[in-house]
Image (tube, rainbow, N blue to C red; front, side, top):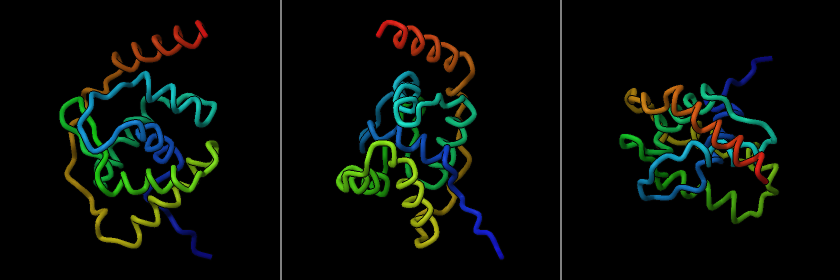
Length: 142
């Protein structure tokens, strides 16, 4: 039996869901919010490699755009976001439902062709270290 290998993995969908706070306008990436929303969605903390890999794959497939340290959703991703939110997908099922949607779109259309390699140097270890410390401090004060 041949197993179907998908481009997007669970962690990519998890990262994508954390970016649902963004819209069609460029906004500065807030790693603390990404970490916090990821924790809320999956009761686990995304690690820096999962975030970097997810952001890169989403950008390569034109689901997000990056301009220096700013990010925005594309029209395609905004439609997926609205579908997930409008169908009232239970909160803890959003990652799996989104994963199905982005892999289906990847297979069925030519809209998700690979983009050029981008510079993600701004997602460096020192920024992640600061973000994790800030999140931990905030979580401990709740």
